[in-house]
Image 1 (spheres, helix red, strand yellow):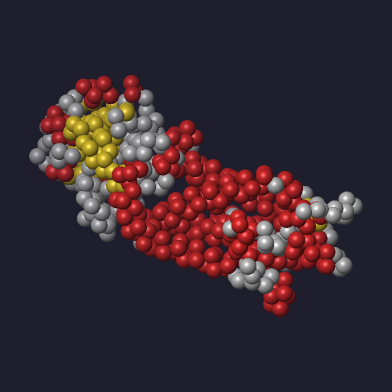
Image 2 (cartoon, each protein chain N blue to C red):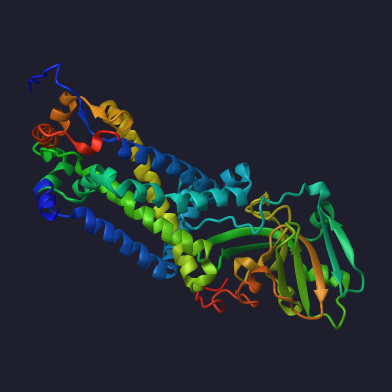
Length: 240
Length: 219
């Protein structure tokens, strides 16, 4: 067979070399991809976010990736939306979408960093400080943490009261000047600027004050509860 | 150039039944995988399509299924033609890389495949394997270091982009050459086409036609 092979197809085994080369690139990419990705995001991300054609949005750099943990893209119409703040508080309350929008807004212009490596630079967020909501509810002294729930019915998240009171933690309803779409967690989601994206729960519908931190959905699957960007999950991204 | 065409010359068998079957099964799987992949990846598209869990399941299981038809087609006696084509795809004949330059392209006498087809086939094969591996890491990420999930996503994204480019190119070239496309649909190409486009293959086939090919007669 080998002799016949030589006779039938003489020449250089370019195919085999390319094949093995590509497998090698793939394997290296898996092991070192996280670092290469960081470099690319930093170098090209700002350029791509300014590209007017939108074509570069197809490149796997500087773009949001949509993750869900349930079967369908959750959807709730704004008139049906309610955010409830309850648990260990003096006065539990519910806000409609309109009531939330009527509260004093906070603007943040900050990166969004995912724990899987992608980063979207300079995202414009608009929303209400979680701290304001806590003041309105009155946090009881025995409460040390917040538990966030999503109307997708599955996802949960947590923050300590101190973390939640930071000035860069908001209940967001606008993203890049538009109302937040279903895919990005609309109509209302959390944005925890200094922590990895999994902390910024999408489709937020409940904030419960609890005695202690109850790990959220991804934290039960192994991610760090304190998801500081650059200081957790064995990653060294630039802090936000 | 004067073409001395013998109109009565019989068409040549370019792709046997097994190869054509494999090609179209693969094409269908690629079509489904690429479209479901795009609707998971492109935000606006994913909002229109919805049903993420279903789309993801289709994407993952079609991906896992991808090597099966290939392995079935490769093994045993019925795979002889395909195995021979694989050997052909693997090797560049001496001087064949001159085909890539427009200036020297005319001087290359091609065998069954042109060098572009060879690279495309190898790329798709290797990329398919890389996608399978990285996709598996993404699906069963808890079994791997957390950094690998990032790396696998990174590789999966970029290779996906490469596959889209290669497949779109492949389809465009196919439509530009109806005889070649017909070869993959019905198996046969005209002798005129073979002599003009693939002279080395044409000669080899004519020498071989003295003894009939056992693989091509259906049993």
